[in-house]
Length: 167
Image (cartoon, rainbow, N blue to C red):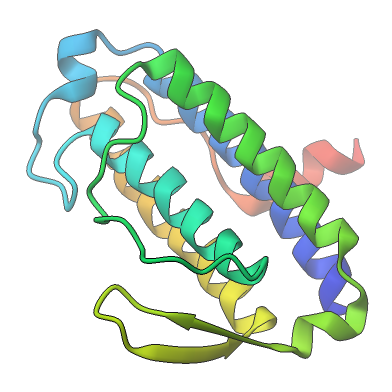
């Protein structure tokens, strides 16, 4: 299996897991959704916004649109349903972006500037690996916040995604 096929599966999994996570977050009251629970970004709301912001940042870099990055705790959408819609669009865009890449383009180097202005270079393989790992990391935090708020966290295991995809 090539890297493109593996990333295509991870992009589909990412979309599946985010849909399930947002379904879980939708069960929260607005107060619970926004409550600061001393997580890295505080609340479910702030963590979900961070995930979308960082995905957009990295995907802009991959597309060659590397401007100055926003503050990582910026709130892109205050309204949950608007955030959810933007997340779904971003996930669809990520699936499409992976599909549009040729196998050899994943080895290409992308140059960009960090928040401090330093120039960095990473391959697309490294960037997409980071993006998917970052998603998993913060989805896990959000899952823990849902549980802490007394709501069942959704099943997000990759193996369950694979089983659903092949059934």
